[in-house]
Image (cartoon, rainbow, N blue to C red; front, side):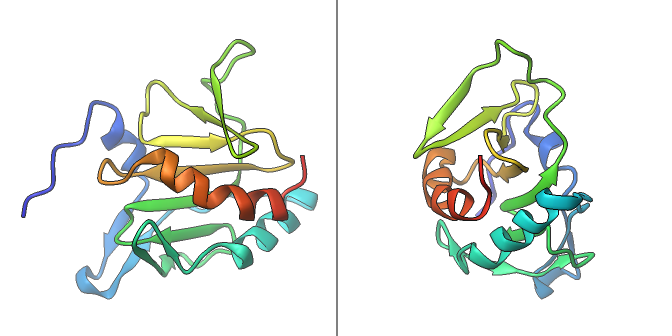
Length: 148
């Protein structure tokens, strides 16, 4: 069954994800390079994240990184320790989902960033998944691993 076309801007958000080796389930994601307390918190988060998210199994990413976790064939990808979103200004809308503030970049509708923590956590969510459901499942591990 063909997948629906991505909304404008979503293709750009998913551009960092490239499926490698077809059926192998390895997904290419450019890893961030956090340092200090952010790096330690991100490593703790990676260990706390679920093996299955919104019905998708966790898969390997290339290059391997403790700051990247992927589910499905790149349908959901998490990068921990990213920079503050460039599009987020002091008046930007941030939605709260179970105690985690999420900024949704208006130019990249598939991209959500958890912003009220010591490390920013970026999650790319394909249109086949409901962002709020994914965010609910990620809220507990993020709160447990990354201090405000």
